[in-house]
Image (cartoon, rainbow, N blue to C red; front, side, top):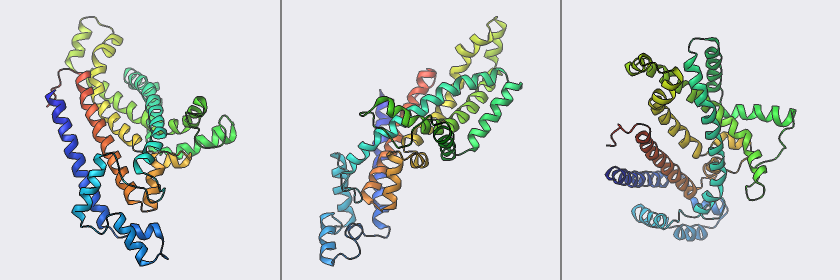
Amino acid sequence: MNYLLRRGFTLIITLLLISIFTFILFQIIPGDPAMTILGMDAEQGQIEALRSQMNFDLPITQRYLKWMGNVLKGDLGQSIRFSMPVTKLIGSRLSVTLSLAVMAIGIATIVAIPLGILSARVNGKCIDAVISIFTQFGMAIPSFWLGILLMYIFRLKLHWFTQGGYVPWSKSVWGAFWSLLLPAIAIAIPTIAILTRYLRNALLEQLKLDYVRTAYSKGLKERAIIYKHVLKNALIPVVTIMGMIITSVLGGSLLVEQVFALPGLGRLLIASIQYRDFFLIQGMVMYIAFVVILVNFFVDVFYKVIDPRIQMK
């Protein structure tokens, strides 16, 4: 419990520091949000009125305190580009990114763990070489390029997927799944390659240790040794990498969402930067920071689940 309280306190302090840094950064960079909204032809009186409405006529400390007070109430401000609350905007895009992340991570986990185990068991043989080539290919090719390739093959040539963007889950469960499958595979392939290589190397390191030789000397079979003793130790570095991948995907797969025209957080982040939408950028940064910290927290907890000997300090 003490560990959870300490991590909760650390989470709050980290978010507070990120909020201060982000707010100050977007207050000092050039550009006037009021002029961005009203346009270059706006009269000075209109600009001043809007600046006052947005609290830009106040000292930066007061602006931050007002903004932070609203954040604590769940109000991240009003998007300049979309003319709607940032919280509502992020919430509306989150379901797309979250669905995509769950599918991509699910595919990667289902494929990478057996592949990594197989590669370690047949180390140095032909199958290991084939898996090694696949993982090198997967790690070298960017997800957006894979997305374009998958679209060309499965949409344009084989016609297995219809043209068009995202289908909401509320409209059609099967349509939503089908519209997310190709982008999920595009994200999953590099992830599979990374996880497979990490798991293979971690398993090979564990197989050299004394406790494995002891297990063999007791007459245990290789399958039992790997699945009952070696795998849980080898999963610890893999979980670390998995945590980094999850935070990256939940932050919005910028290029993949762009390639497949998915209305997720990645496209929202691009739009916020493109239109200098300060409140939206600040909201997105706070969301991504929260996701990173939260996932790292669960990764630490998962270490303890995998190996109870790990001390949570």
